[in-house]
Length: 288
Image (cartoon, rainbow, N blue to C red; front, side, top):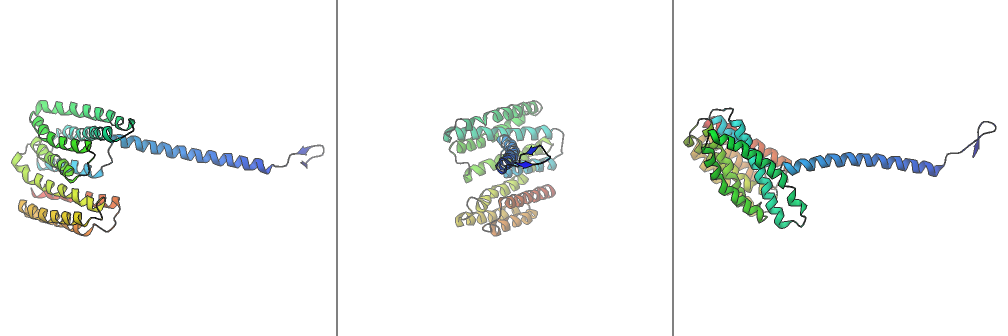
């Protein structure tokens, strides 16, 4: 105790009490920061449960569709077609994840997380697609042509072999076929879309082994040789479709030959693929 004014005693500060106070204050500050981080993390998890973390798939979905749209005559009807296309992809993705997790996960909640997104996206996509098919019945035939490839992807998902090369190719084919659908909806002919659709197929088919050489199979010499061999053959085939395609496909061959083994980050790999996809879109629209 210490003496202040005459007749009054003032308690001296208690060192232990100050320690408790600062510890309590610091703990509260850390807790508030953790709550904020947890909230942001929860929002990211919530979004990821609805939107798949497959950045390469978006380029594969968009480029053939946009190429077909611009090769024909862009119309307002392309907007609901794009909506139906993307909603259908999202519905199929979640349905396939439900199939996969139902078989391999011990946590019953894991597959259930995909039920609501599959139903919501599927219902919305079906509504838009059926409305379009009233005025364009041939779209039902296009959907039927894509169904076998969706079935193959679903079987691979059920077997938990989504990273298989054949599964990747089965996903690429209907995506590139959307060029024909968008072109026909814009007033173009089926025949005019065959060559540009094949050009898209040659490129996106090559991304399946190439991306593996950059990430999952980056230490596999066999995968690297196979990827380079494919891109060399694709260069020849693309040149036969149109000589101007030799330029972008030479670029794709160089990236398949030179980039694997350099330890590039996933973000850099993705940025390179976005650039290559944009080059393909520009050349296809420009030369066909």
